[in-house]
Image 1 (cartoon, rainbow, N blue to C red):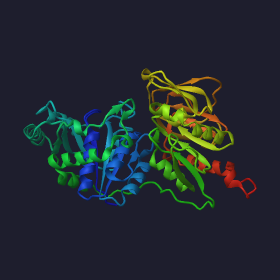
Image 2: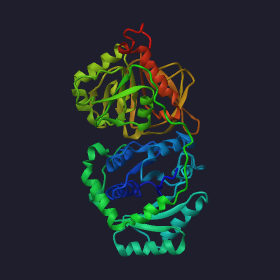
Image 3: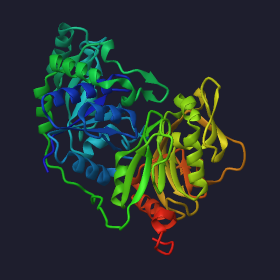
Image 4: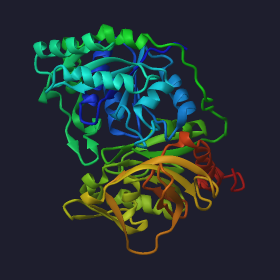
Length: 466
């Protein structure tokens, strides 16, 4: 399978690779290309912008969470009908789960996909030094192909010519253009990263980015680099839709407060016979007719007043849980199920009240890192001993107001214990960890199977068992 593909990597975090990626995505789409975006790592916010810029869902690829076989499968399936695929890296090119190996890094992912790398450099305060930087990155790993460089925050054509000449005279890497510093194409930042695409007012932003790239970036050269790849074959089986009879209906929370989901998680649930029904805990007054609720992550702490004010919805979710309805919640979704969320200003907002705890936002309490999760006992995700991988990223702390029971044990990427996760009450399981189901597809199967056994709607007329 010949899939034109290019990995966009930064020399470090903060060089503007997301801006560069969005500009290239938008410019290629404006050229009439079908562009498939991807993101290296567990991030949710950048993929949201990718999807808004291209009109196609962006997929996460991750060497530590998923491994090569799954990454190649996700990539080849999503890219099959695209003209070109663009993969945005994370942090610096060689940064990953360890300071002494490549696991989880953009470099590792580029090699798994046999894809050329376009290196993004902040060129605002350098000239010939750019050649030394490019040379170092290009030679650090001989198995990696750094094929091009794009300079960000370059104020003039004259400055770019200096950078281009230095790099192309002293390395084998080609310069494909630059972007000027422009406050009009800056995406605002907050405590978990960029403002989400849902909030940005994105249409005008992507138009400006596309125009900027068309003016100063050699898009023909970028497409040529992407076409220089060889054949790529999938190395893992595709999810197969099975005929289970009656469909499991899953209500997926989707609004400004809850918007962090891995697309592959949702598709694996669908492959097990689920129908996904979107609803808004902020705006809707009643729950849809569903057998399970999936409350993803997001920013409930920024919308505490609105969530607290929707008493009807909070009550409906609590009653759903008490009736034995299945709820799977991650991070922000878990916070919503507690008694209250206390925001950064110290204001407490009443929430669903299923778990006797308060989620308290504290800037010094950042929790960030990869997580290996193991079920400590049987629950809606499977049997004791089942494992999966995911990522944790939050500023909140769970302050108990009563007994809390946990279903999972956690370890980090180095194998060190990170305590317990997975608050459990009845058929509700709520995790701080965002689990990627593709790391353990049996969990998606177990979850849907659990709902089939316990949903009153599905068991009607079937002896209570499905």
